[in-house]
Amino acid sequence: MLSSLNSREEGEQDPHPLRRCSSPYPSPRQLLIRCAELIHHADLPAARRAISLLSAASSPFGDSADRIVHQFTRALSLQVDRLSLQSPLSTSFPSAAGDTDEAIQSSYLHLNQITPFLRFAHLTANQAILEAVDGHRRIHILDFDTSHGVQWPPLLQAIADRSDPSDPPSIRITGTGTDMDVLRRTAHRLHFFANSLNLPFHFHPLLVPSSLPTSAANSTSFASFQLHSGETLAVNCVFFLHKLIKNEPDCYRDVRSFLRSIRALNPAVVTMAEREASHNSPAFLQRFIEALEHYTVVFESLEATLPPTSRERMVVERVWLGREIAAVVAGEDRFERFEKWEEMMRAAGLTAAPLSPFAVSQARLLLRLHYPSEGYQLQVVRDSCFLGWQTKPLFSVEQFNKPNILKQWEELVRRESMKRD
Image (tube, rainbow, N blue to C red; front, side, top):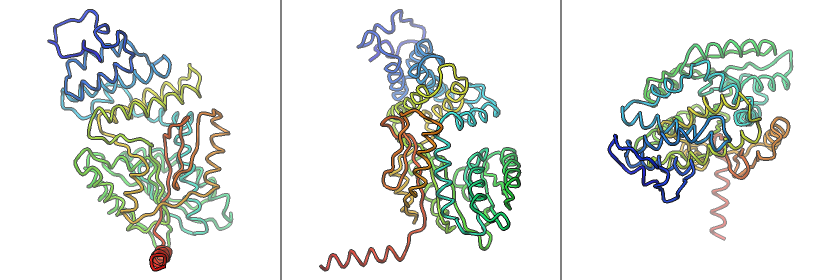
């Protein structure tokens, strides 16, 4: 590795840092991993020197390999500053990146347009909700982390298309978020769209203050939530559950509490989507390498499907994905693979249900019509639908519902009968 990055006095200069490696000319990726090793071992002065080399060796305007190194270098730089100053990521990252709320919103909308990731998750979750509430007169959707509400116009349109225009069902969305102004703007847009479809519609914004601990925020949400008589409830957890994983010994405590509270609401369906990644190791280096592998594939997909001069791609990579990478590197965002989510859902009393063939074929059609690269792949494994690039799964969508007690009893009787025979 890089012997030049062993700890030295801050004033010493190394005239040929790259020549002191076991490999005479390490790649920027190797140097990136070496820098992560130095941070892992708390050698921050040497890590700063590695970051200086990486900053000179990478560019946000090169190929996908250059760009991924550039973004991870920024994240490592922020992590070193954070460890040195003991400051939280939430206050250090925006000032370092210079990103306004408008820039973040713009990058989110670009992400929705130029990649299939959000649209795949929204479309597949919406189809599960649509099938679960079909034929019901009063529909209530509890949506966690609503943001700009881009998931819901297609669902409202689908409900209107299959309803009697003279007697459509009523729809109510309770949308949660940490910014009331954003929620109000979202409510206004959705009201306008629902009115254009002649759908009875109501949006209830539910503020979850970001300053509260997660457990307290969960309690606030469920205390304020109201389910009216006769309503059929669908709970939407698209790109939300990972936010409940904490950097503490019992890291899933808030997830388990949240899922038990959801089960107690007796929903017709619970939909979830998450990154298919394992970024929850307590060891910094392992978490870093897992994140590097995941986001390298994401950047490769953008490289293959968008022109080199794409301004939208640059905004998405710098602002949206850059913030995600920094959050993962700092341990603020901790993703898990679908097996772990299934395990916690089962423990809370919710069972995985297969997505319908129509939901899967609809997702395949989305990729074929709007993202014609053969690199995007769709697979169904154990009732979960996966979107990936080449052979690497990147995102998963699942639906869960209440256990069917009668079927469980019949299965128990069947197994006991087989034992006797």
